[in-house]
Amino acid sequence: GRVVSQLNKYLPKRQFILIGPGRWGSRGDIKLGVSVTYSDINNTSMLIEVARQKGNYVPELSFGTHFFQDLVESSIRYLPLYPDDPDIKFDESFFTQSKNILPEILAEFAHLANTIRVIDVPKTTDGLVLNIYMNTEVEEAVGFLSERTTVLDATEPKRDKPRV
Image (cartoon, rainbow, N blue to C red; front, side, top):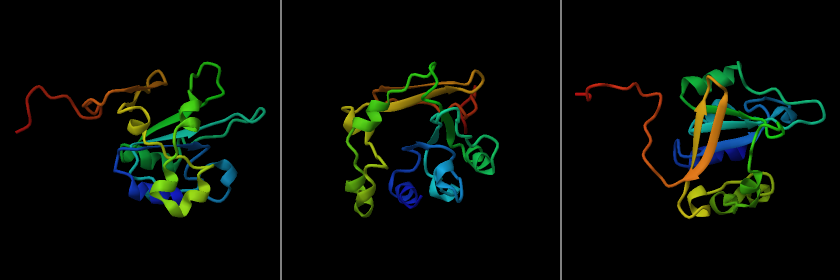
């Protein structure tokens, strides 16, 4: 959790996504997920919890927890990811094969580079950025790489007249 907290302080606010195993915010048992507090991740734009199936067991994620409510209240997007589900298409190789810049930006945590990966998406993809579109009503999301564009925040109410 300490390295996540340091990344949260170092990376530009709301310009990075945290992706990791199990339930984030779990205290005590590391087997449940990433042991962090809300203040350790409060600058991220999105949290993706990865639920890998182990035998017949799929980890329980953060839905309905106090930690999840903190995310919702601060407009941090949340996405549960079930990569073992046959209906899910997830290009894990992008994350495992892209250059890990963790040792460059937080040298004191370089020994964790096999466990924690930090990817500069625009540098890795010749300037492309990761976009994630979500529809919570149908519980679907799609992530794709594209050129940087200005996107309106869907949470901002549409107005007929400009603000004065």
